[in-house]
Length: 41
Image (cartoon, rainbow, N blue to C red; front, side):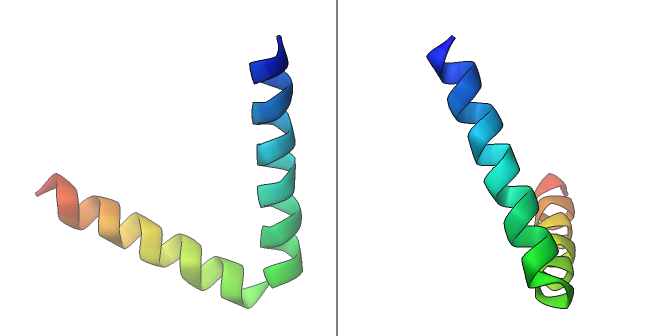
């Protein structure tokens, strides 16, 4: 139960950081996706 609450809190913090970061958050997201795609090859 505590783990689920912790996970939810983490996701909420990520969302707040993403909204607060705006363009920077978008750049980080795109970079992360590109990295994952690169690693899958």
